[in-house]
Image (cartoon, rainbow, N blue to C red; front, top):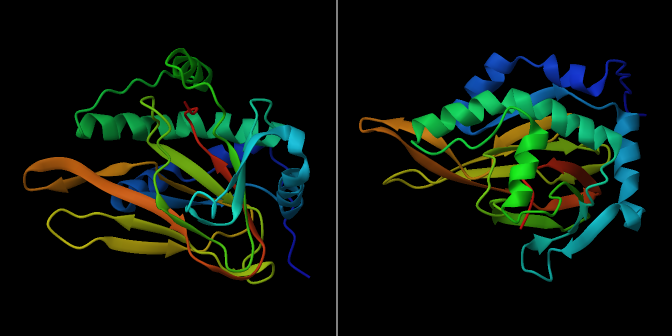
Length: 243
């Protein structure tokens, strides 16, 4: 039987307890960083079970139909489950300083206010009114093509994925993949096994890369390798809404 860890602190406190200096360093260096355990196995199962409650979602996407890969995901409505809402609200202020630092290095606007509520209101005013929070479900043979989650002009540069199943027990394969396009060089790839209840913070589009000429954009994409057996489910937290 898989080991069960009980987490008693509120969700916001679990996010706050991360080593945010080290996480920022990892994001700056690699464009992605793993968090500690954010959700218990029971909380993961509860979230994963929501997938079959159709009224909670605004739409369902079959990846094979759209040639995104194979598998399925569903977008929540704005009436988010408490745990999803609390995670999103807890991550935003922790990621905001990193987002602003990246914008300064890349000489881009930093339109993000101090509160997530204000930022979402700005997205809606710009016509991006649809929830982008997702549950993803993969079975044997499923995978996700490399892509970026840019849903409009109003963009937050970081997002989070949280594993809801246990690798090795519930599924095999299904590694989270990132590739970075390097100037005048071949692309570099990395893979991460998502542990149950743990998060991975990663860039939505690119990260600042320092060269002799100063800071430049390092474009990155993410996807999922083929699931060999079992079922792999994840929660995706995006900090801008979709057009």
